[in-house]
Length: 381
Image 1: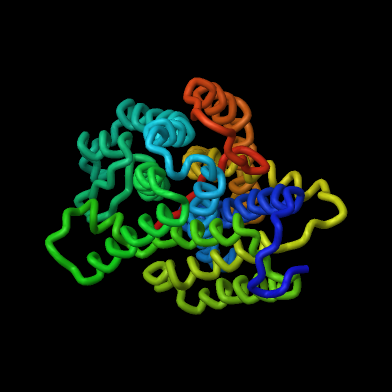
Image 2 (image 1 turned 120 degrees about the vertical axis):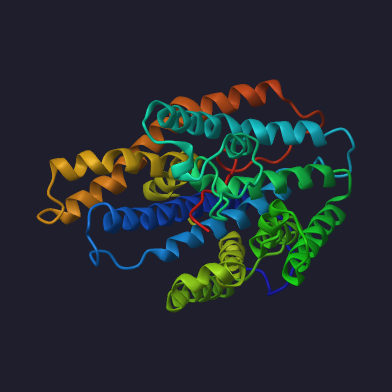
């Protein structure tokens, strides 16, 4: 146990466990996002209003993923800072991690639309918006919403912007890089709050949620320096952060307007506390199962809503939601998880590994997460 605020020699065993714990957090966050969308469809498509309590807190999983993403980028790039020859390769590897599955799912949705009788105008789509979706560029629909073709992909616009800026910052030493990225993101948020004739993409990317990447980067700096909270302090911080997120339910939909504070700060506290927990005697089956689900969380993020939308109509015809409401909800929740695991094993993992094998970073190996690379799942903003 380390004194509060002390720096101790990093324990590699503890570090591996801590990163495994982040995978478990990813799984829990992804399940929260799934629960929110299950509630939405249960009420809107199946007419099961009032069956489930409000799952709006599941949206906080997005904020947790952003914090984790900021942490992992700094942690896994330890040997890359201060180099001028890695920016393009780093960004190419991140693009290879995100783009293939996203493009595949987006393409399937686009083809399905083109083969149906639904026109673009009825959805607020345009070919410019379609191309912007594939290029991770924020583009406003006529309604003012920044949904891409795959609506839940709105966070990938933030994610790719973060990767781009982070790749450029690798030319600087680690602390300077984190400071520079944080200063830029903070300036963007302030400029957006002050207001001005900003372009639409700046209005979108300048949202305070952008600062959650900075929370994660700051945690990575102190973690790599060996900082750990005492176990009792970590437990207390974790409990207080979870209580704060639960208490935010009193705000209802207003929590979305203040999410960087209401959910982002507690999410950072959760990550910091989990990273400080001491290593238990053994890692059980459920922890490993949730860690695996954390690996598959990107697939879950991309496929869960399309799968539910495909399933909900035949489900309603096959089973009377009124007579078997919980069975309908269980099917809506379980099928996306099964589809996500299959997608991860059959496509995401092998394709990403194959692409990364052809895009190698020169130099000493960088520390890797306990499982595959981390990427945030999303919900509506």
